[in-house]
Image (cartoon, rainbow, N blue to C red; front, top):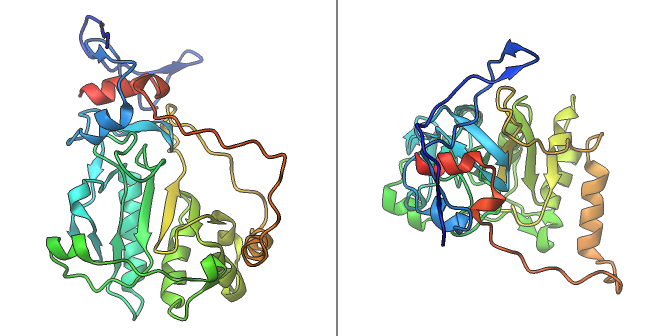
Length: 301
């Protein structure tokens, strides 16, 4: 495997636009960085145990990027506990950590819980993970367990405890344990203006559509998706001062409830397979050349 040595000193300069100084977070320089284009990205980022000593910023897309200057969600807080600590995936941008803590306070205010259990966020420098998620690469994704949190779990208990599933009939419906607690924490996430999307199983979205009163605009962010019956996935928008972050298309207009009901109908009565549908292509592992150039500097710091 060849490598190119780019001589110089790692520098960070202000970006300019239209001749005026910008407050955007600058892209890190590759000067002085050993560039490896062919390295398997998940191995390189999955084995990086510390964050890049750079200003906090996301680079690339949620499923093809990296994270500079990550901050770590404390393992335990007054209204949350981070789970599966051995994975070292409780890192994110400061905005994401603030959103998680806000959700946790809403969970703690509910009589059924003392807060929330926080699942995977991102690795210390983001990037592809050794196992699991395709996304969670830029510090803007977090998984929140749906079950009420009693807190006080030891490190060992956090490794072994099983999350509870809330789906019935392959996700068409919720179980009898689905309650106002789950809807409270999902709504707390969806009503935060920094949150761009929430992924959860179709039956849960339909249940919230049926139970929601008053302002229903937050339901637009709650999108039905495969799995996501043990936890829901919170995804933040790209921060305004992060030009290296790639935006996702906004959700379709409306509350999305009819779309979720169609997902449910398709689960109960699956449509016949399309005989003309092309065979799915095997998924290729990401290499460093697939990621934004800034990720080279993130990996090196």
